[in-house]
Length: 227
Ligand code: ADP
Ligand code: ADP
Image (cartoon, rainbow, N blue to C red; front, side, top):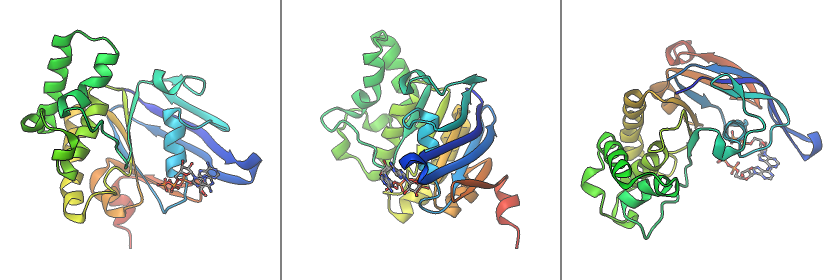
């Protein structure tokens, strides 16, 4: 777990022709679930990718647990990210998909099994551990993608429109599912969406982005209950 602090975070493309994110300052508390919401093109993904270390920062700072990480490589940031196009390894079982990163990290087998089983229980994936991704429903695949990310116990969890490829019914189901899982794990989470209903129902707080600039940060009820 960790706090995340954005300090005048800025991203320009094309030598300043496009300012995708402008002076974004935001403190995310330890264990908080923050939803970053706004219309397509407002800079949400760019901001998230800068936090993850997948996009070069052109101005300002990202701090994790009090340390500026601008120059820290993505793999050393203690962050896990889930995208909308969660590419699972098709030829591996659900168990192996989730275990893979831990095997790469050379954890002892018993410890890998314990961690994967623990996460599988939280995500209610226990009955499916031996299946391949192709034998799962969309919602189950999405849960495996989340499991693969959280099994490493990152300090910060980033999600970029993770539900946008699911049908409407599943989306509603997964909303409460993700909120429940986040609550259980208590991991600091930044969740990007263009969907106001997701923002309203999922986050502890909502940060509203428009044209790369922060408009408002508040609890969902304070943001959406105003006439
Ligand atoms: P969102 O995630 O809110 O849809 P993005 O962060 O993807 O917004 O994009 C923000 C703005 O930056 C948009 O105007 C987009 O066209 C622009 N942009 C994003 N990536 C690039 C890039 N690699 N090169 C140039 N412009 C980009
Ligand atoms: P989303 O809206 O789902 O965040 P986009 O479709 O805007 O994603 O962007 C997908 C990819 O295309 C990203 O890697 C982004 O950097 C790149 N991109 C987006 N807009 C532009 C742009 N105007 N010029 C070049 N690359 C872009």
